[in-house]
Amino acid sequence: MSLGALPSLWAYAVAFWLFVCGLYGVVTSRNLVHLVGCLAVLQSSTYVLLAAVGHVPHGAAPVFLERVQGAVVDPVVQAMMLTDVVVEATVSALLLALDIQVDAHAHTLRPDRLSRLRG
Amino acid sequence: MRARTRLLVFGAGASVLALALLAAAARLPRGGYPGPYGTALNRVAVQERHATDVVAAVTYDYRGFDTLGEETILFASVAGAVLLLRRTRSQWQGAHDLDSMPDRAASAPNEALRLAAVALVPVTITFGLYLTAHGQVSPGGGFQGGVILASAPLLVYVATRARDLARMAPWSAAELGEAAGLASFVGVGVAGLAATGSYLANVLPLGSPGDVLSAGTILALSGAVALAVGSGLVLMLVAFVEETIRRDGGGGR
Image (tube, rainbow over all chains, first blue to last red; front, side, top):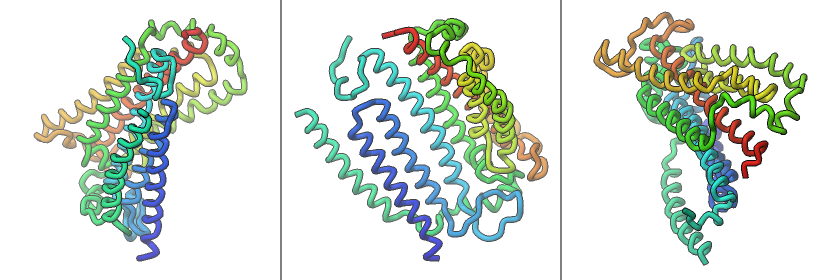
């Protein structure tokens, strides 16, 4: 059992690592396109986390096309992960469209040069 | 300094976030999720819904209402992105002008790329349709199938010209597909409401588990999602491509 629990802990570590990397990127970013990329990394930590939460030691995939012996992993979190991926992709596209508009109006993609409002 | 103030504010927020994350991390399940729903669904989904892929059964049936919400997020994001990029775009019918832009003219006649696209596009479309139609049987479904279907016009654009992209994926058809996809999802739900009194309840014959034509509304909703996702991605692709070509080639700045 302790050996079977190991992949789950590793996955949590990876999720934490991705989260911190993404957050560091978002905080220190000096370019709005780079920022969207960092946000994607940050959000990808949730995919790993959800998959790890649903993980069952030695569990099979929740597909019952053939007879499945033994434990099966949780299908609910996998469906949530699917939702997560789609939302991440569309939000990225929306943010990139916003970046294009920012560049067109302010002629810069550096967030610290956007402080002044122009009419 | 303003940057210093910003860093201080972030530091305060980050320390609260770190505490919350640590508290959450201490309670993460180890070696198996204790929640009852997944186990229960794994036991009943094949019998109840005749779907052998339980993830699809969750997405399109047990949590179908959440998927409707997600579809709405997708719809809103696509509408927002297209609206933001629309600024000066006249009509997608202006694709002939786009082809005369300098960068496209240089990269258009590449026979190797064109051959690769000719070989890949039918495979891509078949695979997308296959994934959409078999979501209830094996891993797949409308989201995955829709994304793969939308990459076929992208391949055409990479290998040929903007004009061919416009011919393969006309703006009005993609707009119609996006709206029809969401509308048919809502419609299937309303049909369930009318027939049984609960929204998104199954109204179609269930078939036998493992068959392509099985699982009733799961298959129908999967198709609706594939239409919405595919058309939505094509809309965004065309909007971004148009914007890029106009700005790079047209000297917009």
